Image (cartoon, rainbow, N blue to C red; front, side, top):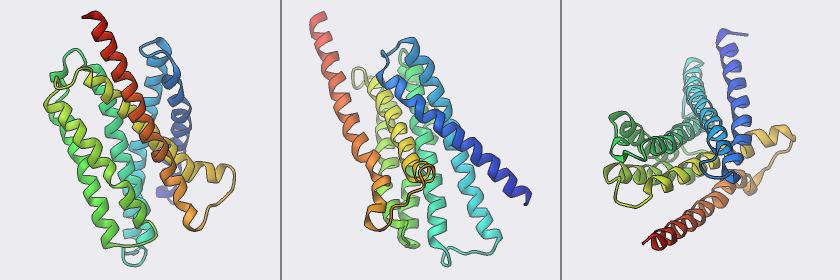
Length: 248
């Protein structure tokens, strides 16, 4: 076993452990009282696990691509293997940026003008650019992974556009920081559950989905999660408007 394989196995172990802990921690802030001790403490655990999972995914994706090149495997020969590596790196980038946005808007809620920093804005642009790269790769190196790449590609552009809008006009929407925090953290949760259904659950319970239904684990968390974000955001928006009206 080479040093590369040992390092990759260690990285994979860290990735898996952080993924399971983060997946469990995700649900506590969802149901806990917002701003309460459980929400804050376990929410940080979830966020830190998300950082570990996403950064390790990015490193693993880059490592896989480098290993393919080292072994002389070209994109044209194995487009599907490259496609999975690109997909893994892409999900790592967009999820990292979403979770960081969720923490940043919370930390700067009393001074929203501080949300926009060169580093954070560069990360948001990187997330949006990764969507374009995914589309280009999926079309140029068509494989069984390409429909998934194209289906997932809007995430970086959609979330990045909303982040940039908030950074450039932080006071444009009342409680905009809260809605961004909610959507970003739940968006990270969608990524966690997608990874679990696609990679973790199938290995844990030793089953395999083939044929057209193989796409289901990839899209199910998004199909459930995005409407949940919309509904929950509207619920809190109505609540804040009622509170504002009562105070007036």
